[in-house]
Length: 215
Image (tube, rainbow, N blue to C red; front, side):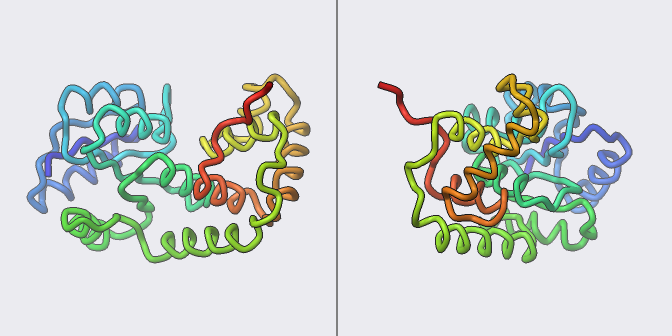
C-alpha cells in the first residue's frame, strides 16, 4: 500500500515510517496537521492514511470526514494515545477503517495493517469490545426517549458526536460550559443511557445528527 502519515510529532512520524518501510510499505508523504493531511491526500491519493487524532489547524477526526467525503476509496486509520470512547465512536461515525493506540507494539501494529489489506478493520480487541459493549448498552437503554430531544439538545448531541469537548461546544453555541453539562445530563436521561459514550453510540447507531425541523 502507498501510505500517507499524518502526525504532529516528527519523532513519532520518523519511527512509524521506519517501521513501515522495513515491512515493505511505500510511504508517499508525511505531514504535521489535519489541513495539510487533507491537501496531501487529495494530491497524492494514497491507499492508506495513518492519522493522529490530536493535531493543529484541523484535528484528525475533522480531516477524516473530509478525506472520506472526497476520497471514499482511501482507507484512513486513526493513530492515537486516546482510548476515550467518544473519540472511538466519532472515528467510526466518520467511516474510519481502523483505530489503533500508539502504545501497541510494532508487531501488532503491522499485523493490523496486514489484516486491513485483507478487508478487516484495523482495531484492537479491546477497542472492539468497547464498541460492542456501548452499542449493546445503548440498544437496551435507548428504546425510550427517541424523538424527545429539544432542538438545542440535538445540537449539543451532534457536536458531542463530532468530538468537541464541553468547552468547545460552549464556545460554538455561545453558552456557558455548565449549560452544556446540563444539556448533556438531560440528553442522557431522555435516551436512558448512563454515559456520554453511550449517548454517542446511540447517536451513531440511529443517525441522530441533525436537529428536528422547526415548523
